[in-house]
Image 1: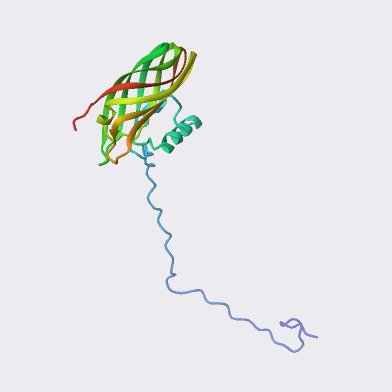
Image 2 (image 1 turned 90 degrees about the horizontal axis):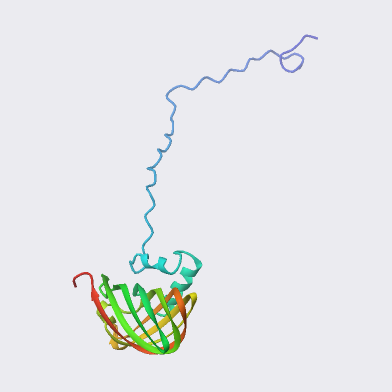
Length: 213
């Protein structure tokens, strides 16, 4: 038997299959997308929802820490997120105590502008004994520096044995903010001294602005 070219089928012929011709003409190509512009630097975080720099926070706590968040939440819950400041206070006495303080404050006005100014006050109350000096954080619902001026009723407590803390809440007497709410202020601070006091008393405050208007 003769060999064949078709898989050994007898009587077949050798068959050559035509090859596929090479492609002719210009090949269509899809251009690759160009890389986009590189992202720029991230914007800085906003100073605060009220537009205030948190410069006074470092007096009593570490910004961003648990204590800072807890104190900020307490102030916000009391509606005292319209004004903030930092104060320095000296005081003491026996049975009846007296104190004097000076503060730097920033207040957001109803039109959105920020007013910067100062307050100073003297007050008397009781009962307790000892002497102390402290620095504190201030929050208030006041929307004008002038609303700090006048008389107020204080309720608070101080405990110092070398190092200690103080808290004071004040209701302004006969002073109301632009929305009709009575002005009230809360201070929380730390300091040094030897004093044990829980008190209710009265104070007189003066205030002024650093900028015109």
